[in-house]
Length: 379
Image (cartoon, rainbow, N blue to C red; front, top):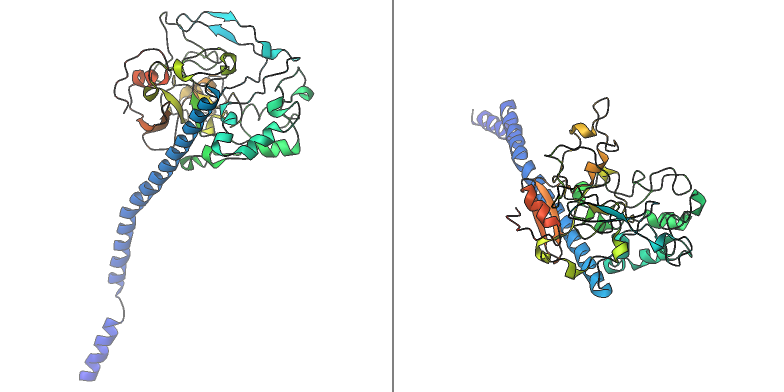
């Protein structure tokens, strides 16, 4: 009798009933459900921290460049559009004589942007040297020397080594929260256009960080929803289009070469209250790391503006299309894949997180370098 009881006890202690097994599985499922959000939050916190470090490094590189050159790095235009001198109060535009557009000039417009010029300060001297190596091309040439593709030779130079350099992707320009859109990619204007680089799209590094051009417009913008698009109106309600202006409200834009770069003394609103660089995303189709057309953004568009659901960006079938003419100008805003906001580096080198709920007037004020606004809470 005792031996039989011992066998029953041993058998009972050596296994689980079906009910007990289901209870254990349910408990494990509950624990996983509780822990998974915490794990995901911890991972995003680490990714956000890395993005913050990248912003810090980029801002310090730009500040070191300023210390050496006495001005922030410039963007050099790539197009045939002559720049304009725009009155930032009235919006009145006048022609600007540009000596660098003379194809016989010893110094032509290479089409490169400010990120390209701080590569040595980012410990990317070897990559910088590859862009500078070709004679009469790269940093030594003009993007558009004439009207035919065969004469393109600036940062659009076509050779196997130069193409390989264009596709080199520095990690400091990647945000790990946005790896879905990170480069190198073939869909980034102006390298994606078939009339560039031997009439073929070119694989190019991208940037998840862009310079602040202020709160002016981007291209001649169509009518936009006031909640989505807000531009600096000046004293006469003039919408200022900084796309071709030799002056704008911020620090980086496509024609900064015309004024030989913005200087620290130009930031009269205060370096701790003026945005230098912010997060963006190559999903805009206009974020090639080395181009003057893709390394700056505007604060006229609300933070993290949802283009995928906006009417301006939906095609005839209702699908989002960032390339639509009504959508393209709105894609030039700052955005991130961090929940609730976007990170920015200021002109003093500090980094801060701005919430999507920030008052747009405050956000606009932080984007201007010398407009004298009183900045409220930036959170």
